[in-house]
Length: 102
Image (cartoon, rainbow, N blue to C red):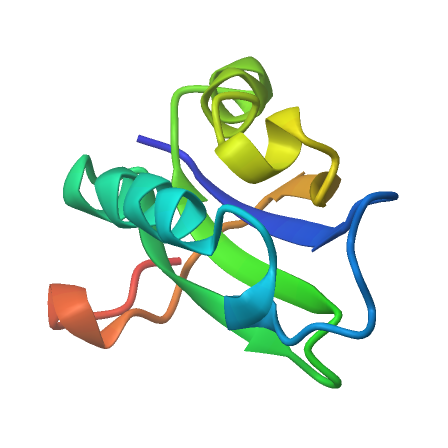
């Protein structure tokens, strides 16, 4: 299954005066993301830099599958989150597999 580097950013309804866990529907969003991890879609991920963006390693058949799954996120549906970029990522170095492939 191909891997992708996926960035997510703050949407137009993000409230800058609130922290990430104080945004509306935090619990629903967190449960949704945990479900993507449980389903094996998100391999790993989290905020990068100043926290205004997240980076995820995603395993999916193609970009359309990623967009369809992320569109179901309560934060995407309410404008708190937007998909930034989706790029194929050849993970040649991965300690989880015990060896590199190239």
